[in-house]
Amino acid sequence: MSVRRLAEDQFQPTGFSFNEENAIWAEATIAKYPEGRQQSAVIPLLMRAQEQDGWVTRAAIEFVADKLAMPYIRVLEVATFYTQFQLKPVGTRAHVQVCGTTPCMLRGAEDLINVCKKKIHQDPFELNADGTLSWEEVECQGACVNAPMVMIFKDSYEDLTPTQLEHIIDRFEAGKGSDITPGPQIDRVYSAPVGGPTTLIEVEGKTSPKSAKPATNDVKETVAEAPVVEKATASAQPALDDKNRPSAVEKPATPDDLKMISGVGPKIEGILNGLGIYTFAQVAGWKKAEREWVDGYLKFAGRIERDDWVKQAKALAKGGEAEYIKVFGKKPR
Image (cartoon, rainbow, N blue to C red; front, side):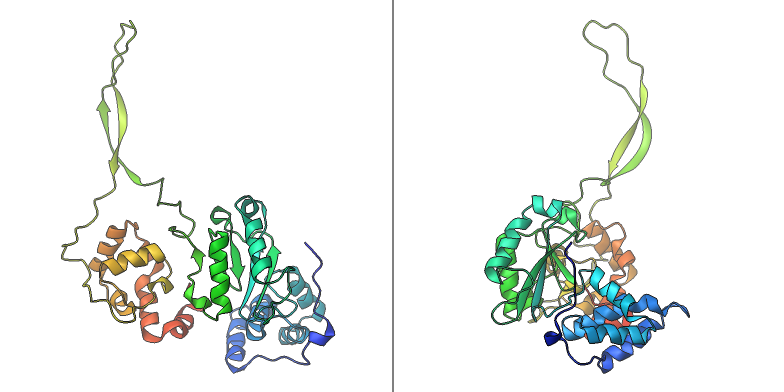
C-alpha cells in the first residue's frame, strides 16, 4: 500500500466544525461509549466529517482530536491508515474504489480499472473534468465470493461486468446514483449461491430400516438389512389461496422501494410485488400468521422475524430514511 499523506496546504480549509445535525449526532455517538473510552468514537466521527465535507481535511482531524481529547498525531494515524478516509478532494458525486485483491483480480477487476481510466481519468485520485468523479484501487473489500466489486462511498456494488460499471458511473455522474441498488448486480441474495441455496435445504426424517440390494457377481452372501437415515423434503410452500396470505393491493403509481428493508433484494422485491405487496404500510401491518405465510412462501426459515421486517417497515412508512436512522441508528440498505 502506498504512503498516505494529507492534501497540500492549497487544498486545506482554514477550519472545520460539524453542522447542527451532525453535532447532535456526534454527542449521541460519543455518549455510547463508557466513561474514559470516548476516544473509541474516533472512526465514526471522522467518517461523519468526511460525509459532511466530502473528504477528511487537516482541520477536521484537529477538530475530532480536540473533541475526543486526543493528540493530533493519534487521529492522523487513524485517518492515514484506513483507505475509507479520503485525504484529498475526490469526486463530489462518486469516488469509485475498485478492489484489486486476488479474487477480484481473477474475476475481472483489471477490466473494471480500465473502465475507470476511460470514464473518469487515466490516473487514480485525479478528478474528471467536472470534478464529479474520481477512482482508486484498494485492497480487499470483504465480499470475495461476489467478485469483482467496487465501493462508492459507503455502498458496495458486486458481481460486476465492465458494462455494468459503466452504467453505474454514468448514473452517478448524472446525479442519479440512488437509482442503482447497492449489493449484487445479478440475481443473488447477498452472498448466497447464484440460483439459490445448494445446501441445508433438506431436513432430517425418521430413521427406518431399508433393504440394500443383494450382492451380485456370483457373491452368494445376502447383504444384511441396515438402518438408513431417510431425508424428507422441506415443508411445502403455502397455497396462494391460504386464508393467511396477506391482502394484496393494486400497484400504486409510486410503489415503495421495498429493497430498503434489510433482507429484501431485487429478486425478493419482485416476488412480493407479484403477490400484490408494494408498500411499507402493508408489511408493517402483517400479523403473525401473515408473516409466517410469507416466510413459508419465500422459504426463509424464520428470516422475516430475525430481520424484523415489520419494525423496519413501520419506521420507513412513518418517516422514510430519516425515521429509519432514528430507530436503527443507520441508513437502510
